Image (cartoon, rainbow, N blue to C red):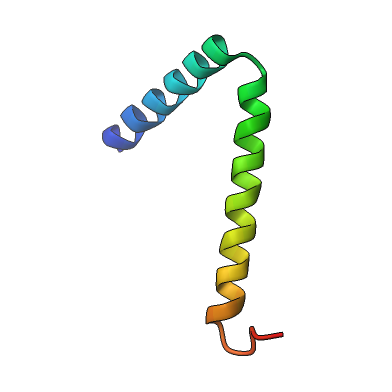
Length: 54
């Protein structure tokens, strides 16, 4: 549990630092990267799961 809290604190600190350094554009970029990764993951699941070939 303590390790998870440390990792969360580190992630929050890095996120705040990135926001401070790069400005609000980094939030938009992060959202786009996350959306792209979700699309790739869904596409990969479609190919690997039975009946996924459309």
